[in-house]
Length: 196
Image (cartoon, rainbow, N blue to C red; front, side, top):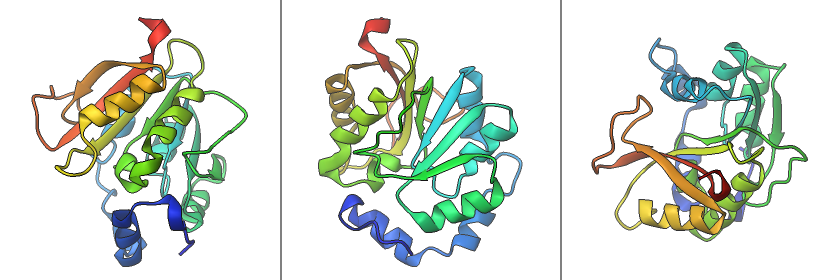
C-alpha cells in the first residue's frame, strides 16, 4: 500500500489496512452500481474531475458514457487498479487539499465518503481546491458522504463551501435524488456564488 500518511483520516488508514481490494472491486459488479454516474451524467457535464477516485469505478463509468473525465487520488495502489482497467482515462496521484491540475472542470465530484477519508484539518482546503478547479459560474461541486455524529456535519461542510465561494443548490439523501429529510447520508451540490 502506498502510504498517504498525514494526508488521510484515521478511518481511511484503518479501512485501507484491512480492505481486500479484489473483494472491494467485486461489490460493484452488479447493474445498479452506477448511481453516482447516473446522477453526474444527468447534469450533462462538459467534463468531470473525480476527486478521490479510488479504483476508478465512477470515472470509468463516466468515460464509458462518453464524458471527459480525470481521476485523482492519493493512493497509488488504487490508481494502479484504475489505470489497468481504463488506460485511456487520465489518472493522477495528488493530495486533494493542495492539488493544482492546470485545468478546470464543469463538475468536481467527490463520491464515496472522500470528505470523511481526509483529515479534519484539511477539509476546508479540500473544498477550496475543488472550487478552484471549477470551469465557470455554472460549475458544480457534488459530494456524497455519511453524516456522522462527532465527525463531519452538513453544517460544517456547508461552511467550508461558503468559505470557498460556493452556495448550496441541492441536497439529496442518495444518488438517486431521494429528498434529504435528515438521515445518515447526503449528496450535496454546490456552485459558485456568482452563479446565483
